[in-house]
Image (cartoon, rainbow, N blue to C red; front, side, top):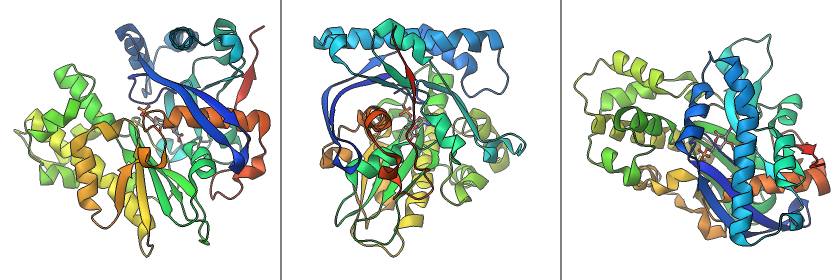
Length: 376
Ligand SMILES: CC(=O)N[C@@H]1[C@@H](O[C@H](C)C(=O)O)[C@H](O)[C@@H](COP(=O)(O)O)O[C@@H]1O
């Protein structure tokens, strides 16, 4: 899995038995192998941009696949695993544009999303059968191509008594709502708004750093309430669930527009980072509050890069004093590995499962996803 933050490729070697609610998934190895600067520079040329050079897009598609193959081969060598012992690769690829109609407002064109890193190249370079391009069938069957985490979350983490919110804070934040098994409610998943993406973009632009490590910058700044108020004025945040978004909306132009609307000047970079941090927390908490009203025995289990931002986690917990907020570690899943594992599970469902397994989910079409590429 490679997400919006462009930090590296998340590689999970999973041993899977069974399918559907009987799936048993064990993580044998997990590692995030960092990207080199050249890779990030190429992706940034086309990532979430409306105008790009087509020759770049054409070449970056196999380049992503070859880079990912090399990283997978490196990981297997490091773990002492023979590629012939690996049944399948599930490759999410790299999202370069995510365009639901709510973003484009062009209703002649369907919802769309584009993940590059061609599966045939991965199969040939790793000699492992590869499933890729998971999001297209979700759209073909009526969805927005995301969040796909719903499927794995539903199969692996539904609990008898506890109502669970599985919150993933990547570049964009999303959650899967999993009512307990005795509830008449149905589970579903939705994006919420920015996770780390605006903070990361700001750090890159002004400090030439990939992220605000340990929230150092945000912790030394002061929240500007006017800017925060304007950041929160966005139609997307008020739309009904489910909905999806990306850095196509939540980016530095968005921040610039809000700075002008708020008419504040002389904010330090640190103040802006403190405000962006609270903006992500509030967008997340507002989303959670919409589903928790009137419910008891709720736990929020967090995964994704955001869990390493102490201020973000503190801001979220402080706004949810009546709800248990914990790392997804607590229900025996590595918070960094979760999304990679979920794609392994999707691939398992495609080859051994049944679309009916996920028919209990609301607003997530009951389909098996992924396209098959053979090495020879
Ligand atoms: C359209 C798209 O690509 N969405 C992904 C989003 O997909 C998850 C698996 C989903 O569909 O349920 C992911 O959570 C996030 C993680 O980002 P990173 O933590 O890797 O930065 O990136 C992107 O928004």
